Length: 348
Image 1 (tube, rainbow, N blue to C red):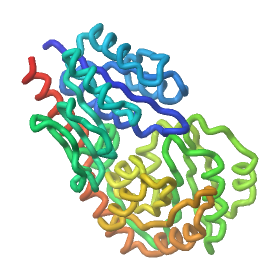
Image 2 (image 1 turned 135 degrees about the vertical axis):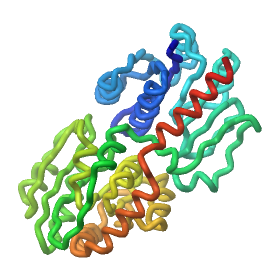
Image 3 (image 1 turned 90 degrees about the vertical axis):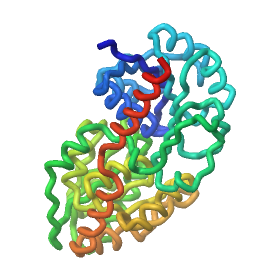
């Protein structure tokens, strides 16, 4: 059977994080399982995003411009793609129209509903508040909304299927992760805040791949009452999450991975655009809001008592775990990929 080419356009960096890249890789893996042949176009602005894509087995075409649509069109034609998947806040309505005028189906992964997507054939927003967003799309556009389409890599579904969670008041495994854009300073402040807890934890602190070590982080680890392990460029995030009793994390795409594996969350919103996800997860009952980082980056002191309360209340965590697993089942990438494959076959 002839494999169907797809071209992905996304970027990642310490500033914008790894969420765009990781969810594109998840969708690309699902497309490959269904007979697709994805290729990526990316800016070489950081090593980690390129490495993540290449380690997943996908070719990467490097582009110099911020969002060079002409280059994207050229590469899509070169590989024979019929569909271009764009996950990029910098893409404009004019970029989408240019792709459509060149004869491609246009698929957009989006969070904000703040652009005219009239040229798109397919739009995906995996966030819970997507059902309340009004998208400017054509009547023929397929719009996929909500965590049923959360784009997770297949290892999360595999671990979920073999996982049996048990909760005890003696649990002490804490995961601290703020995604691929996490800085060492942010993690250091969380470790300092956790030092106010009345009991000691085992803390796995995962840093973004490009985050440089800082004196503040070294000092926070040295002064901590907890057992601290600093992990960079983690390639086993699903395993680390599965081993956690509680996670302290931002309200980005990492939340859907934690939901899938039933990890209770203490969410710290690091930016205004994370507030809707944070609120939705709290409403659903799978997370508690630790607070919002201030404009100066200060971490709320509520983290230590909140994590302590969660660890000493296994019944509460069991309920949070079950509700997280209800929200995200780990099959969203397959569902989304099947709709893209159906679209491509229909258009042939």
